[in-house]
Image (cartoon, rainbow, N blue to C red; front, side, top):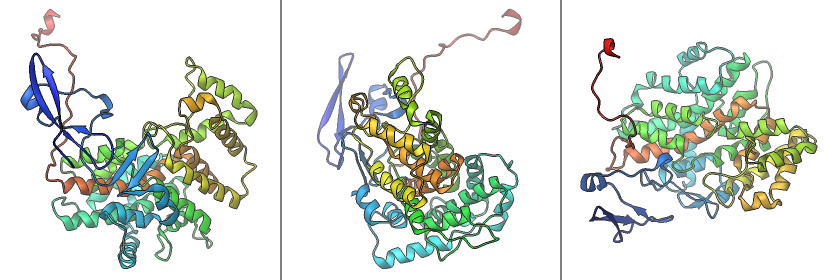
Length: 430
């Protein structure tokens, strides 16, 4: 991180020199860590959209150019040549593994997929119609009561064990939440299946008969996990980091991330997109909804188009579209009315001047919902699957933060606009 440049701040005739830090990639950053101590002022940045809350070596996004890299590797190359557990290793340890390292890592994750049998009782405390995300928040937070040998955040070995456990057990928890909602028996993990295939097996198998996981489905699921593995300092990742800064155990921190991801503006976007496609219903109604989307006075918004960070295109969407075509070809779903609406909407978005000018391109959520529905998942499972994928990103960021010698408990400031000091008025005089 190169240093040397400074920015000058002038307030009431007094000036301060603020260091400017230059990252490997991305815009320079003005260092304001000593601003309050030296100048007695805060900065104001609702949503933290112009504030770097940490330094990181894990993921980089250039929204203007449509770039997403993990440890320097473009997401498109990883999606084409790698697989989810290899990306997990990359995110956790900073380098692509050797064949032996990958084999050992896959073995460790596979051997950690089962849950303590007593955890099964937690699921029975939820109503049958509970949202799977509500179940996951509760169960993941409760895991800290079972694995006391991996909750000391000051012990590097325990941090490592916790990372492995969370990556391994999250698919099991999500699948159990799904099975519980259906009223079906839980399906135990199988060590002879890949990470993605094992998840599909736990979701769709039943004890009464054998279930074969189609390799095309497993590959599509693996890509969904890979494309959602990490996305820099988003809302849920920042939540995990903030919770971690207080010294909370890893299971509590990840539960906090799941709770944040549950929000419809974050992890629920692919569900909202699919629900929008169903609302449109048929291709002949698309012009009506396009007109509504262009009408500023109409509250209707097209979901699955554009992105808060990407101002060019979402690099994950290209890969996700390929997976969507593969899955739909396999299932013969090309006559599906929802898919027809999606395809026509996509065609219009890529040609209509309104969409082009506003850079409203199909994003990763537009395609992932279509794939998951075709696989047989209800919309209530979309966000839990996102949580399974993002766990490795959360835990990688968590590990990085705990190893940072500059770690401090998070304490955002505020611009107070309430009443000034005033005297208390006794109740009989009000």
